Amino acid sequence: MTDAAVPTELPDVDPDRTVDNRGRGCANGIAAVQRALEDLPDEAVLEIRSTDKRAKREYPQLAAQTPHELLGIESERTGLLTTVYTTYLRVRDA
Image (cartoon, rainbow, N blue to C red; front, side, top):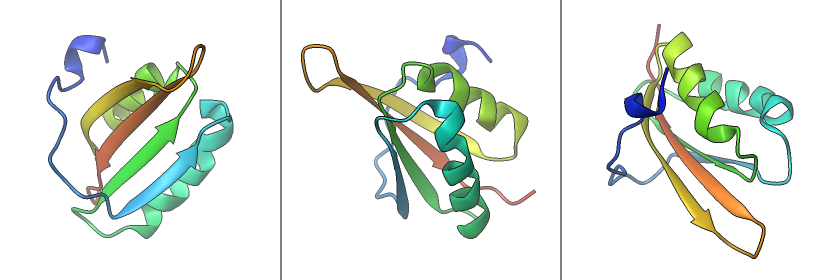
């Protein structure tokens, strides 16, 4: 999946659950994301917060390889060297 496949507009939704992966690499936090996706019902929205810049690439890949829908990714600089990436996924049953 390329960056062009990431929606440019952020969704106007309230997430049903948030996984806070700030301070962890995407690879380390993906297990928590997968557990949350398995636990949430169809149509629920999962918010993932990460400080790993690979989030912009890895979470869209996750959505492309699963039935889940990527709703958007937001980047917000929170400090001199820190950016928080917030990803929104809609849970889709297989």
